[in-house]
Amino acid sequence: MNLVLVRGLLYILASILFVLGLKMLSSPATARRGNLVSALGMLIAVATTLSALTVIPWVWLLGGAGLGAAIGALAARLVKMTAMPEMVGLFNGFGGLASMLVGWAEYHGSWAAAGEIPTFTRVAIFLTILIGGVAFSGSLVAYGKLSATITGRPILYQGQNIVNAVLLTAIVLLGVWFSIQRARPPEATGFDLAYALLLGGIAAALILGVLSTIPIGGADMPVVISLLNSYSGLAVCAAGFVIGSTVLIVSGALVGASGIILTQIMCKAMNRSLTNVLFSGFGATATTKAGAYQGEASPITPEDTYFLLEAARNVVIVPGYGMAAAQAQHGVRELADLLEENGTQVRYCIHPVAGRMPGHMNVLLAEANVPYEQLVEPQDVNPTMETVDVAIVIGANDVVNPAAKEDQNSPLWGMPIIEVDRARTCLVLKRSLKPGFAGVDNPLFFKENTRMLFGDAKASINALVAEFKS
Ligand code: NAP
Image (tube, rainbow, N blue to C red):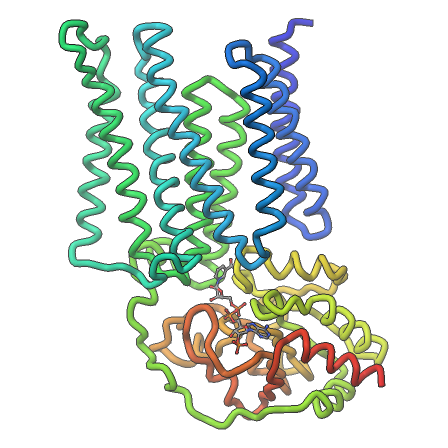
């Protein structure tokens, strides 16, 4: 059979595997298999592409693949689960950079090969460097904010949106100017106007990435990372048009679309519009002052907590970032098993932005083999919260903060929360009364029906397990 046809069929197979893998990622029960299926698709796509290459020496390709694999393996070992958003941010950035380089290199390649670049390819090249450039520099800023290398607070100045709008307009004009250039650079002067415009576009895109990300606060970075992920997918898609690669177009479009869907889901979970996330400078000013919620927190000992849980018929566990930080998920599962043996119904409720990355809590609970059927959605639990005997909050804070529905001045106002404050008893496991990621105080700790089990979540859970066993 014709080799070109075989390669085409293999690309179609790879694309189908990407789509199937993505579909499987939508349920915790099939997510791991989905990852493998997508990885298999990528292996087929990479191998097929490499088999068609004749220009680049194999030693370079193998060297590059080896280096990439080594960096990946090292990152998997060294990067902590809680630092995943930073790593994903960096990966997005490198994806954008790679696409930008493809566009830049193709400009030279097309000149050399044909002496002329068709308008369609020019447009695709400019889109590649524009979206790739924004994704690259924006991701570096997002990384800096999440890793606290630069301030997580929104950086605002007067006329910011106007500056960004002017820059964007300038980029569009540069793009149009670049796209209508046809002639080769005159031999005499050697000045290549199109190339100068392209370099101008690259510089402007890099600046736009920085300027459009600095006004966004650290608390909104997960949404921004998801959006930048979508941009890096779109850049890959545009790069696919530049070099005529169907598999790049398909995979880039899938990343672009899934990134934008995730962005929407996260915005909805925070009850914010994307425009509000991108332009409001959320968190620049704390409207509700620190210490605004006063009251007496009621601490509880593991012994008394045992009696509380022992009598409960119906428990909802709400995990948050603190469970990840303490690595308490296995203990939580053990405690849940003991509760069930005692005849208590146990359910887990995960907020979409709990933890530090999308699906963070799902991954940890899956690692502890928590049965999927015990996971319930906030919108299903909230209406029946009054019937819950004990809501156990394990290292969660922002996602259960009732200020979101009680205090119009709170930065969290309007964000849908898991309404544990309406359970008969709310048990909160954390080390102190300190705020969570958003830096907002939590009136939950002072409610009459709240009991605070202070300490590291893993130590507290282990103490409870020991109480049950004895
Ligand atoms: P959170 O509001 O950040 O609160 C976590 C709490 O865990 C802290 O208040 C801390 O209190 C406690 N904690 C930390 N280490 C602990 C330990 N070893 N043992 C016990 N408790 C510990 O967490 P969340 O309720 O899960 O909310 C997530 C927040 O992160 C949201 O604001 C969300 O927007 C943001 N975010 C989400 C993502 C995402 O994609 N999911 C990514 C980045 C940011 P103590 O210090 O008192 O112990």
